[in-house]
Length: 129
View 1 (cartoon, rainbow, N blue to C red):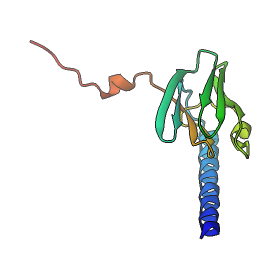
View 2 (cartoon, rainbow, N blue to C red):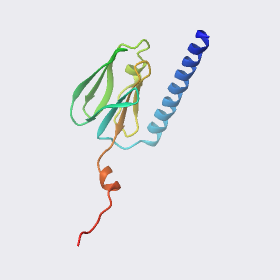
View 3 (cartoon, rainbow, N blue to C red):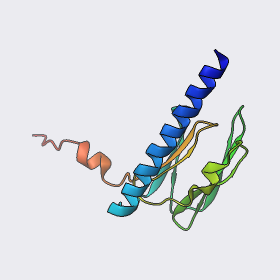
View 4 (cartoon, rainbow, N blue to C red):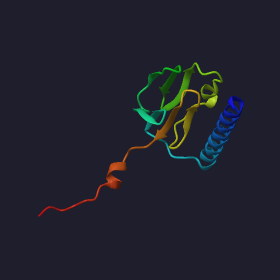
């Protein structure tokens, strides 16, 4: 039974990587708009939101290991990760809305977002008399 679970985990990982690659290619072809922030999620929970216009390093210390996300010149990339495959480090730099970096072993997702005007679009204007 243990081998069956591992085969399913590997299959799930491959499917997620293929889906991420397809999303990456679609974003590259359609040329998404520039984002102004990144959102880091760890195991489905928001870890933090950081502006792309401020250079910095974000160290994510987990029980399963470490990841270091860097923001430099308006782009974010995974500089370091001690996961077994290191795939997340080779994903390159992201700066367009919807682009992501994913570290499957550590369950870390970095996504470019654009928060400019998002509240204005959701807010209904009212007039007080």
